Length: 155
Image (tube, rainbow, N blue to C red; front, top):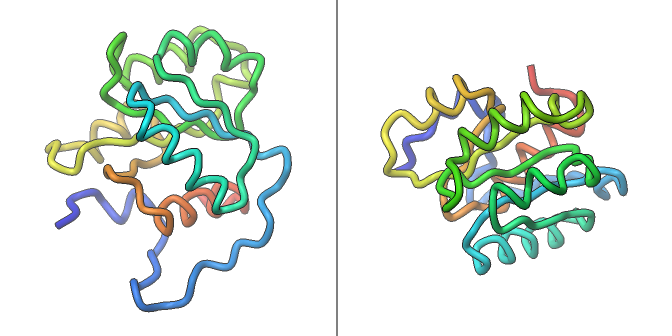
């Protein structure tokens, strides 16, 4: 049972037996920053993004590394695990928003969190995240959120 808020995602997800989402090729300049200390999970997410057509990614295995590269990488979106060893994903979101230039400060943030954590939708929304994805991240759900960001359908 998933307890994340579908209203926060703002996109009806396709049924398991329904057709795949048709997105077309991902824009070459759609840069995605992945922040997750678990190398296996991070690398799996990177492969999932590549399968969806997103090849411009940078994987940081700590919040400090993400802060160090965010300015130069200039992501179009950042996927932040909320459970990082050096600071929480909430703290990282705050630092990205308050300590970096405008080009990074306004980047859409998507949280990655355990499904069992109560209040995740409300906490992530209050922290400035555009939405959140439960672990393990499902490709269809990720694809739907990225499609919203690309088309500007996020209101």
